Structure formats: C-alpha cells, structure tokens
Image 1 (cartoon, rainbow, N blue to C red):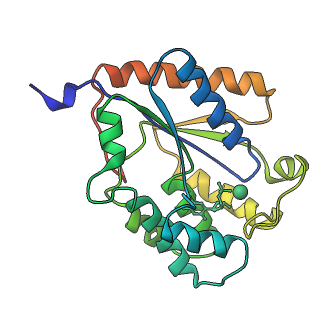
Image 2: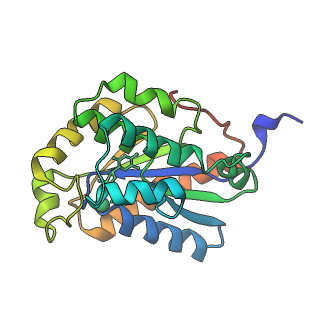
Image 3: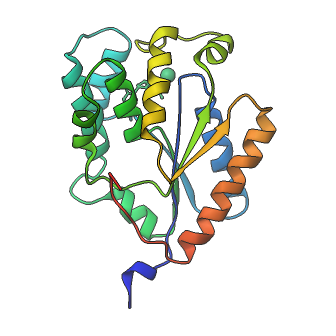
Length: 215
Ligand code: TMP
Ligand code: MG
C-alpha cells in the first residue's frame, strides 16, 4: 500500500506574540476536538519538564544568562529531544492522534532573530523536523497584547522586543499559515480556528502526506 495515503492525525501549530491568547485557544481546541470524539493531544514548546527545558525555564525567568546562540540551540534541542530515538510526534500522528502544539520552530526563529541573530542561521537547526500541516497565527499588535493585563516577568515580555518579533514572524509566513485576528471576540477566534482545524483533519484522514522543515 502507498504509505503516503495512510490516514493520520493533523499537526497543528499555534503561533503568536506573548499574550496573543494562544494557550487558551489551544486548550479550547483540544477540549472541542476531544468532545466530538477525535483523539487529540496538547503539546507545547518550550517543554519545560525535560532536562533542556529546565535550562530554558531558568533562562526565561532570568535565573541564568546564556549566549544568544546557545539558548537558540537549546530551544531547538528541546524540539529534537521529543524524538527520543524515535519520532514520538510522527508516531502519534500515524496512530491517528491530532496534535495541537503551542509554539514551534517559528517561535524559535522569530525570537532569536529579533535579537539580531542571522535569520537563516536560526532556521538551520530546525531543518528536518516535521513541518506542521497548518500554522494558526494569532495576530495582535504588541500594544494590544500588553493591554491584556500586561506581561509577566519573563525575559522577552517587553513591548519594544515584541515589536521586532512580530516583524520576524511576518518574514516566516508561508502557504501553511492562516492569519487570525486575535482581537476579535474570543468566540469568533475560536470559531475560525475550529473551522481551519476540522477541514485540515479531514485532509489528513484522507492521507495528506507529511513534509519537513523548511518546506
Ligand atoms: P511560553 O510563554 O509560550 O512558555 O514561551 C516562553 C518564551 O520563549 C516566549 O517568550 C517565546 C520564547 N521562545 C523562544 O524564544 N524560542 C522558542 O523556540 C520557543 C518555543 C519559545
Ligand atoms: Mg510566555
């Protein structure tokens, strides 16, 4: 049989600035998909529970300082380590589970290149990871994001820096991206995300082939 035509789950990535509403929307989509009987898991990057994730977490909370290249590679390693000898991500998808992923390689490139690291250099360590079937970008200006109860105390949560990140996100957009206005009422954002995801899940059930970064 043609392995490209195997039914599988969808790899869905949500991206956006800090305070764009990603995490709430991720949880919402996961509950919704599970409620209609679709096998779904919530993943997030950074995954702060792994050994590398703990180093990232200390860096983000300013408990440690690292060279910009070093932390970039740790964020990338945090995605690669989820493979752990085999590709857990690919296995889950092949078993029919849809993965809703809160941030992925696009955050890696956008945040590091916003610091001034070379854009193409930032993309290299992500090369060969599974490409998402769709990137749902929750678009918000940093000013509007900051109004939402302000930022927490983490390293990148500053208005001037988030402005740069937004520009880098714009340079990363490709055909797999859907831009959703994050300032619409929550229910409307929710509805748009559900529509995109349901359509995609159908395509993946019909054997949409996998692809890898960078498309
Ligand atoms: P979080 O708020 O979604 O937990 O993410 C923590 C911060 O890490 C957020 O400001 C975005 C940043 N980040 C990177 O700089 N590189 C990455 O690869 C990822 C996944 C996140
Ligand atoms: Mg955050």
